[in-house]
Structure formats: structure tokens, C-alpha cells
Length: 271
Image 1 (cartoon, rainbow, N blue to C red):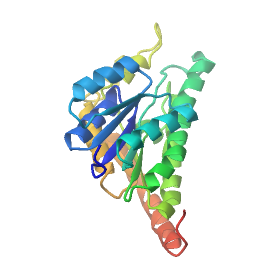
Image 2: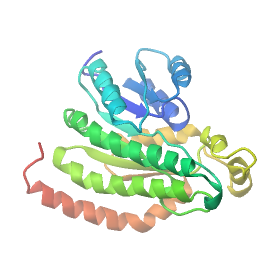
Image 3: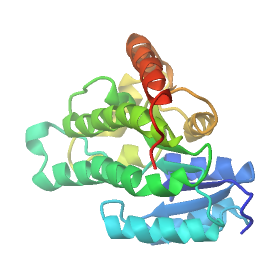
């Protein structure tokens, strides 16, 4: 692979926002690494994208550090040493009343949505530092900005992803790595149907009855991820609802980022 071609590694890339993002970056000429726990889905995604730009796939459980190491090492080797962008996209949702969900539902959401993002940031940092102008992009949610009933643990994980992103954006400034957080409203992905337990309340019905205009197309989210890879902001909403909520907190965040930039500009760079 040519070392001068930009490279992006995307988790949860077999479907939904991850797949749409992979399509977008591949169409723009980037080398795209597709990671997912769904081996068959990865094969289908690779065939759907086509071309040489989607030349790397890896079956990868984001909850496991050793699998992160293997996946990233393989991709960086394939890219000729580059890792311009890492997109922490893999995530799941369980829709239902808190007391009616099981401990496994809680564990799965916490481990995939939060532990997976922490591991990606932690193990991806050394690779990102070796590519000037690199970026870590974490996919949060509208649920990271307002708690919603029947999404309690999902909201908790996404609030944590947004907080982690805000903190790491300041920390990683020392290394020249930028951090962005994308907060989509409800997007038309397989997650809408997978979130509901058989016989339980339907997330799909809630979206169709309670969301004006319905879920947004997945391409809208992919376009915002593309912007996040190139612009300087921390937060990138997808849809009107997260955009409105972010207006309330953005001034505080930007003031903190400006202050910390000044502090780190006077400090020695991190190794």
C-alpha cells in the first residue's frame, strides 16, 4: 500500500454508520480499514464498497485489548505506517425499562460502548502520534446530551464517551493528535431493530411515532464524520436536536480548550 495515501480505521464497519463512513472515505481515495465482530458482515461490506481503497478487514472484538493490538498492527502495516484517523464507532443499544433488562444487557453496553472506546483511544494513541495531523473520532449520540427513559445504561455509556472525548482532546493536544466527538440523532441503521428484545417495547415503533420526520439517513452521519476528520471543532452534531443541546455547552467547552491550548503551548511536548 502507498504510504502517502491517507488511512482510516473504523470499528463497527460492517453496517450502519460505520459502513457508510467507510464508503465515504473510500470514495474520497483513503485506504479504509474495516473492523467488526461480524465476519460475514465484513465480507458483505467489503464487496459493497469495492475497489482497492477498502483493502483491509479484520474480525475484531473491541472489548479485548489483544484484538485491538492485532487489528491496529495489521492495518498500520497495510497502510505503510499511516493511521490518520481512528473512528471508534462500534456500539450497541438495549431498549427497555431499566429493571426489565438483565445484567448481561448492562455488561454488553458498558463493555462495547465504553470499554471499547477507551481501549481504542489508549492503544490507538501511539499509532496516531506517528502520523502528523492525525485524529481520533468517537461516535457518541444524542443520548450523550440528554437522558432518555428506556435507554438508561445506553445514555450512561454515551455520556461517558462524550466526557472522555472532551478530556482526551485536551490531553492529546500535547502529542498533536486531535479528538472529535460525533453526536448523531436517531439514524436509520440496524441498531434500531436490534435494540429491542423479542416481545418487549419496540424502539422502531417509538421512532416512527415520536420522531418528526423519522430517523435520518445514514449518509448524513457519514458526511459529518468526514467533516470531523478535517475540521477543528470538538463536537459534531448530526440532526437538529443534538445541535440545539450542544449550543448550551459549547461556550464552556471552547473556553476550556482555548485555555488549555495556551497552557500546553508553553509546556514540553509529550513523547
